[in-house]
Image (cartoon, rainbow, N blue to C red; front, side, top):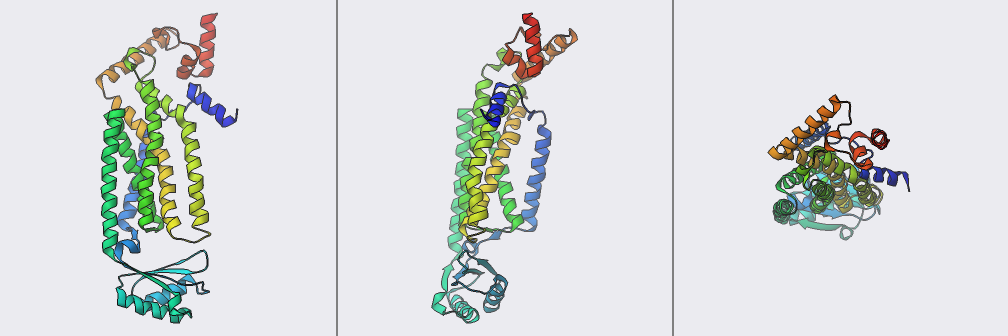
Length: 359
């Protein structure tokens, strides 16, 4: 068995583990800081909306030796508007100019042909109206709203309302961070971006639901025992699925990274960058939120329940009583098997206590 596989097995058995729940305030603080940074970036820098949303013209030239900065200068002089120029992988240029109508587009196309030294019919021109982008944006918002509602309803039925709320908070967290990154790096928000944002919603939920399923199973009839608090079982659920979450996230990120850094960087910017950046950031944020945000938030909400509060008090009281007698803190609840005891007090101490009882 590989080292990673062995670690996963030990995490699943509870022999080792990290206290994610106990350190939740650190993760909450970090997430709040990142979210505030994203919101400030949106407020200060705004979003670079693509031509599809603001209207204008897109010109695609044949392969040219003209630099991006020169082409941008030519386009802005010809149109009187700001221009965005991208060098494509085959050496051609993609020039976007907002706020142009058909007549203005024809004039800019002719001026560009003269400046670039190519035939006018070699430059492809595409005129985009802002109403089309507005329709796409409205449909995207509608789809997002419907998706959120359905997710909350499904998780509330399949699990419970606290998990539904935690998953919703994690989704909003992931979307905010992704949009904030777009604002910080200045990437255009295009139809491809919208597709990527809607796609990451499912990915963001995947790891969260896996942990929730493990947590639901381990907390069944939780009040009938006095060995583990809800937060401890939540922590075991995160650790038990941690390696699986890491593996699935890395496998998903590798092809997306290929699209972003190789497809977009080597072959040229465009739709590949628009989709891949939102997917890359969204997948990473989704994996983070499922471990550090969603499950700790569920534990916080559950620990407010009277029955879970009472359970926690009983467990802490029994542990304090056992500690005062110099016994293992689970002694008040009777002997544990080696695996269960090791999960609570650590593998080394668990083995020693078991050997002492057998002796």
